[in-house]
Image (cartoon, rainbow, N blue to C red; front, top):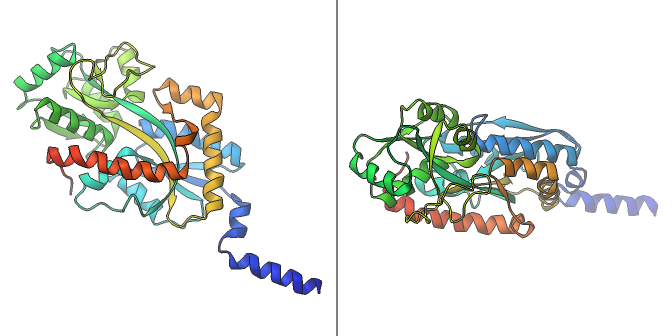
Length: 325
């Protein structure tokens, strides 16, 4: 009788795919793929979150930087990975929203090829210029850009990145769509050339722009969101200066599609706990990342958010006429 009951119970357990594995998860180190080069804003945020999640889950979360194609290369690797919870990607507005319209042939479907885990933070983008550019506010910058459109250059962390799209939206709003785009292999080299005066401006994520702003190596012009940044309160928004431009990025965790619900729940719980940790929260806020509220950190919210962000960014991208092969 006991053997029969045990056999039935075991069969029932095995009949639910992945249940035993999900209950024990994680039993070995996990990998967080950051789809951009090391040292950039997404990398900074990801490493802070990964380290704390590893402590909470009692397994290392190894960070692997896989750059290329505006973040699509690394994201695609996770989309094609086994949905067992051991490989997940730190997505952004570029990888999981803007790229779906910007690229003529996206490497994946951001809505259907991933299992959403949760939204972590939002980060504003700031317009910064070379120190000797003869403009000290947005009105003067727009006037200068219109007068010098044919010879100006703006940089980005790469075609299709949030920094690229931020400037595309800005240029469209200014009426200067012909300013030359200079894509770099990451934020670092783009910033170096801006500091050296080899390009005119960047639409940079505030976490990496802040040290250069504070060091007076670049000239801040405007925060490209509706509200001022708590870490750079003296920089006025674009809206305050008469131009309604919204440019930002966000960070969220995604698993491959088909990941078991129990694993999603465990990763989400660890993510939220990490976000609540005072040291983590202070660290993220110190470089401009605004941690989202708990009601926005759920898998269900992220699923609907991605859908709305794809639709939202499709409008200005199509209007600009910019596309990437």
